[in-house]
Length: 354
Image (cartoon, rainbow, N blue to C red; front, side):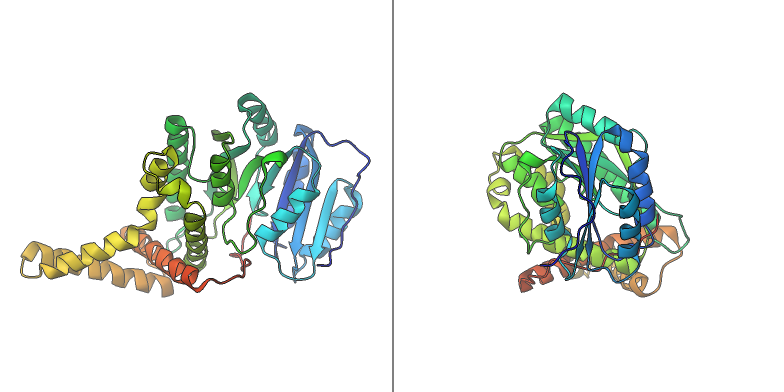
């Protein structure tokens, strides 16, 4: 694999924090990302590694120009598509800092974020730390930005409660997580999801987790129905990979990890099964007026969900319910892809703006 790298000041000690980011065709966000990182430089950042995944837009040019005047920026230009997981695995090994902040190109870190992360890491001696992700996007009459923000707020609150009750949580958000280099274990190259793998690997190895609900980062949320369906399908594919890989954590009911998993992820991942059974059971009771109405309502919702994929809905309540059904359909799509065992670990991300 051929790579091209800019300045790397190896002679300087790096006792602080390294920021690691994979980028593919991120010309619309990468400059603002760099400006955001350097606005936080005095908070303890000592090195930055950005890997461009064979980008074909202006991403490489922007990185090269920035690299000329910022010696602590290290860029690796991959000449073949790798995917985020392979790039993160590679870049983490290149880092010298003991703390690694893995972040996406469209994540904005508010002031004091890095300082607070480092303080919390020292205080709790955590090997992996998750934070709250707030999805920012202008709400429209047809997009799903509001539904996605509502979902992320629920996820953040649920993980915070899991951590308070059990001392673990079901997956740090991969768009922004802190991990110690000594605890980092490379993610299998054929996996589709890295954040859940890293979190479960910490639990399996008996490492310390910490969830900082009070630390919030900002993420662009395009609110595109088709793009979100594809993203959720890919995540579902990766989730089923992790389900098999970490079956020792999830199928022993006396373990805390199994309890937390089935109360959180398990219910969601089996959601399509319950929706299907609900529809079938109501159809079998067609002779009952109440069940007949319930069946027709479900069929109507499914119809609206299919329509929303091709043409956005304007009625908020219909859009929300249809989005719920559509995202369950994405889980089914991801499961079918999982059964095909596609070894490719890269994808085209949703077009993002910050």
